[in-house]
Length: 140
Length: 140
Length: 140
Length: 140
Image (cartoon, rainbow over all chains, first blue to last red; front, side):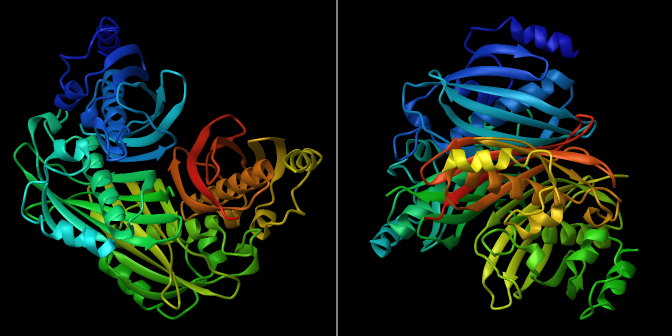
């Protein structure tokens, strides 16, 4: 199943991710950049409704992109449903409306019960905006 | 200034929070429940676009509610702009479309440079859904 | 088993904790203050070898007291072995050699697989030094 | 100053770290493996008093090694004192008495006020035991 799921993702590279099973994922409106077992990259364009009072990409939106993409990576890689146990995010720099930001995930350790994964968010110019780690528990 | 900001918030208790300065905050669409120096409570109704593929409130939306409300609490309490340094969230239970969830914040330590705050999210029936801690850096 | 374990702990209140099963716990040398299902308090006296170059209680020692006591709380409360999945600590203030610091734990959610717990560290004068949250996975 | 501090460290590579300014650091008893601006590696041998009731390297000792080495890295790289704001650790695997474990740090972002750093701990056989991130605040 895993390979099929990754293959299916790879067929969508470069296209807006409008048909995925995640309602918030569709609202975020990413464009898939890369997918392989254990790692996915998705590009998002910052919209005004994604910003905070300072006019920059909201910390909660950064968390949303990361949690969404980590979940997708774990499901397509393991073929099993997992629930996020925790998500720990460090904010390093900011992005503004119209900026394209790229979220990239990596499964660090794939245990039988717990998967440990990380995510980073960068601007197109390579500037690192945020990093996160998450632990997820297999639900079946 | 602090007291004025809290007074202004208290005048909005019970009303939809549609005029705030945060674009994402307006999209989240909360209703203010309580506001005092160092603590704010806001109720949100879970909409379909806030959910994940499992049909439950997305972890990123929980982060959004918490980061949004912590930021509002720190600004109205201190009168100064702060940037989130980090946000660490633990997920404990889930909510579904139509559920009302209540986010409540508390400033634990108000330092000159760093403010340490926490947030919890509960369902209306009192079930604890998530908890978070955050450190914020004064920007001026 | 749980009640027996708590009863056994309560018989040790006020005594140096020199016979416990944890080698590092014995080295830390705490004195039990309180024990009940889901919560334990232990007092530690800061020794010179527990400090950092700034002459204050080392962040790693704070982590050690918290991880040790959370583990003890989870084992005596659930009767099962758990492994720490993560530990997230926020440092708020400092203590010096000779200070007595009190670590207090609380199980926030006792799930079948994951236990979510927190710990705080305060000085005898009530000053809050640090807080932590941890998720632990049942190993059997 | 930075280069001098790194040079001084590099002269100690391969030697037990018995003369450092950190009392806990001396107790941990590491052997310096590598030092450059923004990154240090130190090897530690697991002693019995560093273990937990399960007979494995205590989570608090892992935190101690990481917090100690991150602090050393930030001081020698920036030449300024910093205080740890937070430390977030994920535990991935375990080590036993007699094992040699290697802690390696990296400064991810060196800001004027906040330094963001990470650490990993591996066994000599390359097995990843734990990872951490930390934010530190300049104190002067």
